[in-house]
Amino acid sequence: MARASRKFSRDFLKWVLDKPKEGHYTPLHTAATRSWTGD
Image (tube, rainbow, N blue to C red; front, top):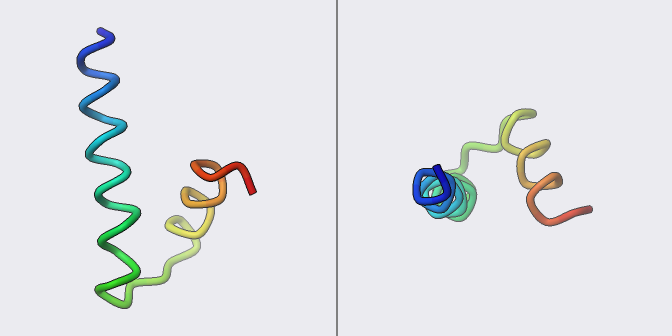
């Protein structure tokens, strides 16, 4: 379970970093980024 969680975290971080470069700023992405960074 922990391994899956780490994989998810890594994939999620990759998604968070990649999406802005693609120019896809969505409400979901914004909310996810805020929750991830703690803003």
